[in-house]
Length: 64
Image (cartoon, rainbow, N blue to C red):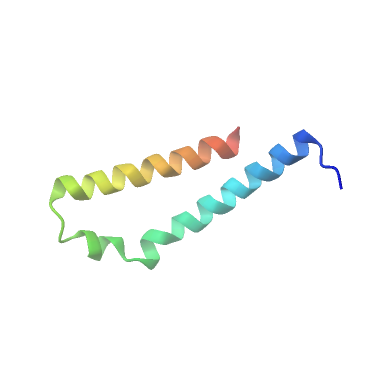
């Protein structure tokens, strides 16, 4: 079975948005608000910023 490059890129983009959907459920399932409440504010912000970076990276790769 031969897949053309343009179709493969399209399917990979759809896969990236599937990963994005799954990663959006992580904060809810792990109850981040409760879990991160005990951390110092700087650590809490660092955690959210790194999560945002991952989300933006997934969106960027999906749009490419």
